[in-house]
Structure formats: C-alpha cells, structure tokens
Length: 246
View 1 (tube, rainbow, N blue to C red):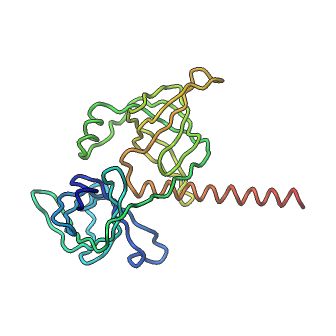
View 2 (view 1 turned 90 degrees about the vertical axis):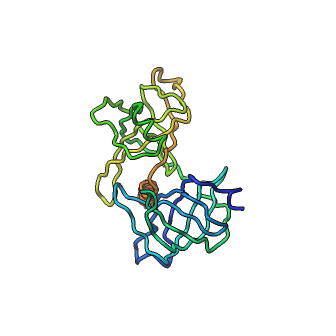
View 3 (view 1 turned 180 degrees about the vertical axis):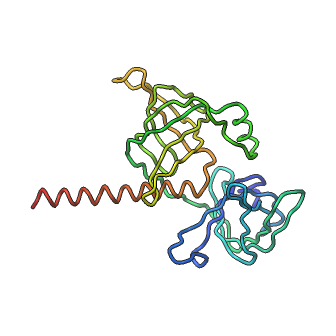
C-alpha cells in the first residue's frame, strides 16, 4: 500500500531523467507536494513553481520522483497524464510507471572554507508563513549579525558567530558564492541543530545548521560550487607538489 510509505502533504522532488535532458543541460529539479492519492499507481501532485511562475511540465513526459515519505526517502518513475486546476490549486495527474523503492541520497560532502555570512532570527510572521507553507517575503532592513562559515555542504553549514542561536530555531542566512565566475547572493533558511562555545575563544559560538525547505535547484548550485572549489584546490595541490619536486 502506498499509504504505508507516503501520504498526502509529503514533499516531492521532480527530477528530469536522462532522455529528457538536452546536451549539457544537467538535471533539473522542481519542488512539489502530494495533493491526493487516487489509487496504487495514480496521484495528484501540485504543479511546481519557480518564484511566482508555474512550470508547465509536458503531458506524456516521464520524470523521477523523490518522495519525502514516512521515515525515509522513496523514489519511482512517473508519467504526467494530465494538467488542470481544481479548487484554485494547479495540479498534475501522474501515473507511477515503476515500483516505489527506498532512495539513498548521496552523503553531502562538507567543504572547509572561510566565507562571510550575515544571519538573524526569523520574525514571528515569517515563522508562521513557513509553517503554513504559504508564499512570503523576508522582512527587509532588519539588523544582521556578522558570522563566518567554516564549512558548507549541500545539506547545511557550520559557522562561527558572537551571537548564540538556540538549537531548533530557524534563522535567515545570507552569503555569496561564485557561480560561473559571477558572485551570486544566496539567502536560505536554516534550522540550528546545535551550538557550542569555543574553549579558546570565549563569547564565540560554533553552530551547526541544516537547510530548511531549501529550493532543490539552489541546493544543486551549492553542491556544484563545492565540487568546483574542491577541483581547484586539488589542481593547486598537484601544481605545488610538482614545483617542489622540480
């Protein structure tokens, strides 16, 4: 039974599969949610959006679906068989064309770095909007605390700050990464997993943060940045080693 593993309201990642990709286009990932399970092989899911624009995925095309199910991740291939609007909700009717199976997401590699970051606690209205999963705008102009990211991954980050953020709280994080030689600003919400005061630096706190409901494409960009930087570091190490041995 599907309901043993997934249920209405579960988050979904819709991922393009190999034959859908253009040359050099990479995997495209869209966020969605289960709206209604109709049978053992058909369900309605919400139509994905980028910012405020609906993404009209083509009927009769197949995609990989990754479900954030009950206690685990699950994956299957599904075909879009219809698109429509019901009770002011834009929906995709999908048919599962493979069996549901457990999905093992690759472990996120943590990249050591020293990146400037600004952070703050979320306002009550922002927290309510996130919990209710409604569109919202971050409140501009609020004071930000300076921090330093010391490692980053596709799943979260670790940073140092004179401000102590409580475990379990949601915080706004803003930092810049280079994407294709251009400096790009990233604004993400993070859930604080833990903190500790540094023994050798009283008043400085190390925080571990997990991204909270991050856009799948943003996550992929962060992972790509990490891999690119790691490759650069390895090339530099090889070059320096060659110079020493010359």
